[in-house]
Amino acid sequence: VQLQAFGGGLVQAGNSLELSCLVSGRTINNYVMGWFRQAPGKEREFVAAMSGSGDSTYYGDSVKGRFTISRDNAKSTAYLQMNSLNAEDTAVYYCAAGFSALVLGTKYPRNYDYWGQGTLVTVSS
Image 1 (tube, rainbow, N blue to C red):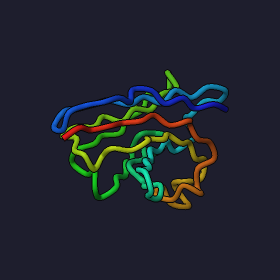
Image 2 (tube, one colour; image 1 turned 90 degrees about the vertical axis):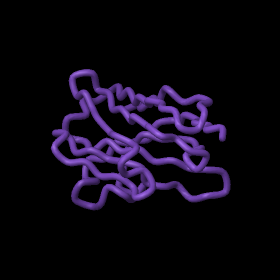
Image 3 (tube, rainbow, N blue to C red; image 1 turned 135 degrees about the vertical axis):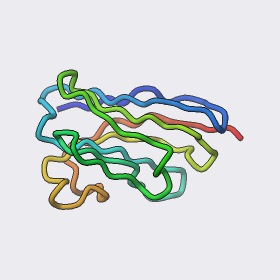
Image 4 (tube, one colour; image 1 turned 180 degrees about the vertical axis):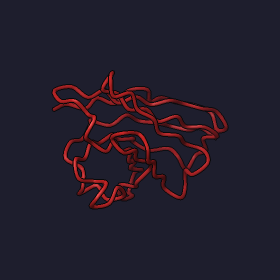
């Protein structure tokens, strides 16, 4: 199973960016898809997650109201729409897939089985 994250880049504060995560090697219908981020010198932080069916979504406190997670199971792809970006959003963003994350907790990296390589988002102020 491979996850590939796309869409990172340099963006000015206040603007938007959308990340994509393409999964290959397995259908994602039964997996929670999550996004995490890690800034230099900081721990990996939970950003957002969505259940396999798409019925349930979860967000970290720092991104609520600004970021939106979505998924297209037919395309084996998850998305993260990021609006009103600020300098504190600068980080490497990782997508992840977790079979039991919904039960064990979507906020914890240890509950995800597969990870993408990360894509860098830099927000200039």
